Length: 402
Image: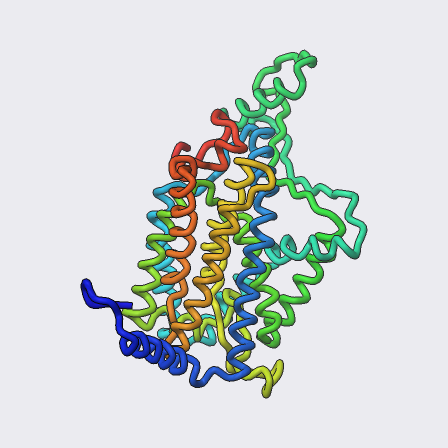
């Protein structure tokens, strides 16, 4: 509302402002029918659920990650400031590559090749995401371990030998092992270890079945089940461990999204032609066309995972300060939902696809920073890291330090 300097608004001015606001709202929703309302509501729900689930699962995942690194005396790769600075560049190169493939060989072949690859790696993410659901229906008390190791002479590097010696000293200080020469010493090198339960096995079967259904039908329901699994895993495992790194990442992606949506047709072209489970969708005409509809509204997984990873980080920040504290998580989560609503409103008003991060990034950064400023905890927020909360400075290092 703009007022004349040093003057009070007259009743006529107020009426004019109210009339303008009403006209804006009416214009924005002039064609907002029942189908569009259902589509927006469905996308909203499919955006917030992965963030809630992934955020809470990230607490145990991050603790387990550092505990395992400490046990094996290994290094944990976390996203650093330099990684965050490079991320939009890598994303732009990937986006341009997809755009070029669509233009050169057509969307059909591009989709076929890349969808097969995404489905292959996605089966693992979906298995992990839905395993807790199947745990309610199958006995998951027992844990299986699949391990791939190698035994032989001189197969360990100097660093591997040093790690193994340090681990043995910590775990078994009683044993006096007779030293042998390099030629006679039998060494063991572990390449791979995977622990899983019966629920994971059932979830794996379900994921493979879901992948087959999607590849055959490309139905939007199968797409969404895959997309939700991707989103939950992304929020849970994205290695954002410092708020300052998260702020750099989101700030750069803010401009990345604006450029590729408003100043080129690249983002919209890829989103419309690349038919892979990297988005969640819902029919705009569901009340009339039902599950067979092909007029789909969509929301990219990046608009869920990237802000969601920041919200998950803030939940871990809350928990590191005091168990049962959710103030930063709740505040930022509410701001994210408000950003989604604003995105939908602007999209309907201008009748044009909107870069959701244009509205979500300010919401997810301004909200926690403002709260921290009010509480006098700005320094605490920007100095927090999961490494300091859960890790060991000698054993847990970032990629940059490595």
